[in-house]
Length: 292
Image (cartoon, rainbow, N blue to C red; front, side):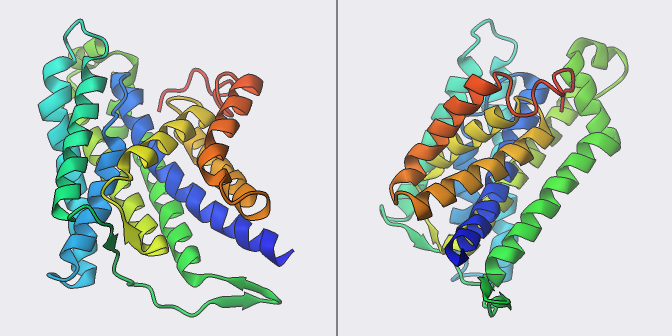
């Protein structure tokens, strides 16, 4: 029983990080209806910069620096790839361009790291908690709480703020939004900034938990984020939250209790099963008219 609780707790924490990453995909897809295939590498940049700068800056300065640099590259991605190609007839141009952008980031990260992984600074040295006979990792708990707070904040921004209302208006009709006086370009830049900041934060939380940064794991993590977005229902922020928690739970329970190699396979099995049973995602049918 203790093992089940331990793996379930790890799964919820990891799922919250997945969900935070997937919300970034959801924000961009919800507004522009295109996939940002560099999102996983933006994630990598956040953790990589924080780990790379930790010996130079104070660790608590290195972490916000990583998030800010990830945000910068996310906005740069929009101006370099998405803005020049979004009006073209080539439907896959933006997606392929973002993939190329991500590969460049991956290559630069690999060069700077010398082909090796980096150690992430151990900032949270907290004693574990004990509830009865169950041991709870304080680091996992802090990571989970920060991820949940970030997800709630992003959801509130899209639902309750002026910029969020503008995002939803553009998702419905960019042309009508322009007629209503919305600065579409500024809002889209804000979408990429929020999306990339969320990815940078998710990467830092991932680094805090696992203590290592691999400059080549961005593509794999990006695929996980895409799976979570599809699981929850494409374009649905609440669905991304639910999908992330579900995937994290199933992944960790299967890995810990069934087969150690299941971690790589389970996301794809879960994706197939959910799409067979719920073709529009776990919350896609219920909220199929909801954008963002």
